Amino acid sequence: MSSYKASRVYGEVEICEFLRAVDRHLFAPSRMIIIGGAASAFYQSTSTTNDVDTYEAIAVDLQEAIKKATTETGLSIPINHSSVADCPYHFEERLERKLLELVYLEVLVLEKHDLALSKTIRGASHDEQQIHEIHNAVGLSFDTLVQRFRDEMDHIVGDPTRIRQQFLQLLELLFGEMKSVAAKKLLVGSWADR
Image (cartoon, rainbow, N blue to C red; front, side, top):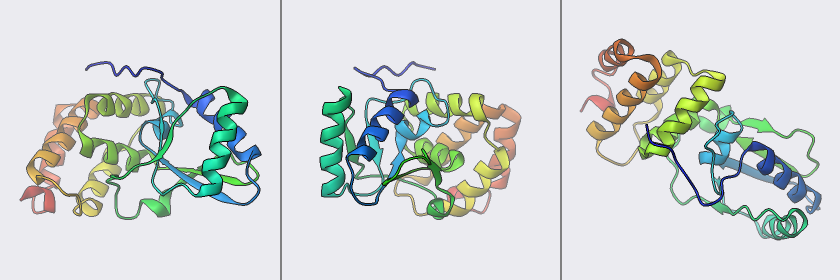
């Protein structure tokens, strides 16, 4: 497994410090759904990220608060709306709220299995590394991953054979070869078996 190296990597402590500063510069409720590497930081991934990707567009007042937080903290953490995000169908029902003490900013992150599936679709080596770190830190359920992949990921654009192979490779990394073989049988007849 390769190690992902960014020019400047931010972990959970710095991301949380920055988001607390953003909250101090808001004057009305705002919401941020965090995906990608920054979401991984909330599940104790140590390779984390060099930016914060959001699922939704960033409102003007939130953009202003981000600029002020950058000046206040000296942390220049780019926060960007991700134009592409492949998440399970019902991910919004499972979002997890973080930093409950914030006054105006509602910080939501993908639930750990939804995050793992969204990163699996991309297939980058640093995504695989982060999923492995999440599994080692907080644990992922084989049954949950297989069920959501089978039932909630058929809208993904791309070659189903390649996506299925990436998923089975991830399961082998996390749970071993026998579990990957078992998952292959469970996917027979699903969208991923085309």
